[in-house]
Image (cartoon, rainbow, N blue to C red; front, side, top):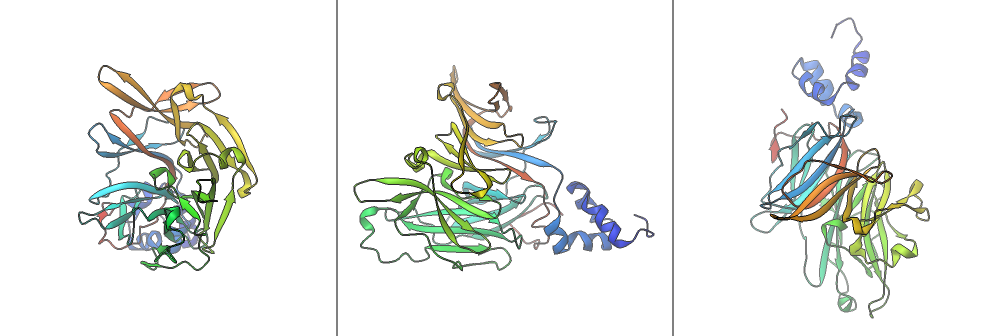
Length: 374
């Protein structure tokens, strides 16, 4: 770039470049590398490409991810990014600001998490203490990026899982803990805690979903000991670190929490009812839940996520001579057209999300679990 162009103009030009070019330009000069590696530049850079990611187990139960460029070329441009390895990945917690968060265990059974930026092929590993799936307690996790500070956060909630233990247990050690990448440690949140009568869904579909700086979990308000319940949503503001309770329309509140899953679609909260009916909370208002559409349950299609065009990504199961076959496809609910994504030999679909390319984690030290971007 010509020395005659003012540095401020160079910065504005570079901000508009594709991410792949930015990573390459870091090797051009020390000035450009310093500019691109600057924390403020990394925070405010937003890539031009949006990706759709599908995580699944193949026919021999190996974890795989396929990333599609979600533009007019979809689904032609796809890659299978190398996964940052921990000994056992249990679940993808979520995506936010171009990062994915994976959670699992090491060989000694200790909880681990990985913050992963597949665009620059860089990841950061950390311990997740006190994750319990015992009879008395349960744990759920959520991941997002604070809208004010662009600081990645992981939130862990430990709760009483059995109603009969409610009166005998006076408190829950480490009921809520928050990890922020900038501090690098787990701590207590600044705000309030969820009520003790609230329980969460430990299934992978019950992990928190980040929407516009707020985490949401499907939950249950245990009203009485005789089994009555009301499904609801618990939210956590990643700026104020305050919890809130969001009550659902009766048709959703009376659905068991195991059959409610949450998604982020264009920074709006989506609730899937039995993975066939799609509801949206408009404008962030808890009383504004509206049903968008339903897929006929007899069609055997189940919604797992959405393209940026709002078309649902579905899975279906069929049988052939070789046994059950799971298909991943895009379903146009208006025309009923189904387009196979060509993901073969799938035994289980684990996760579907979208992300926009970002530079987050670029300024993290190179002594990471997985660092192939430099």
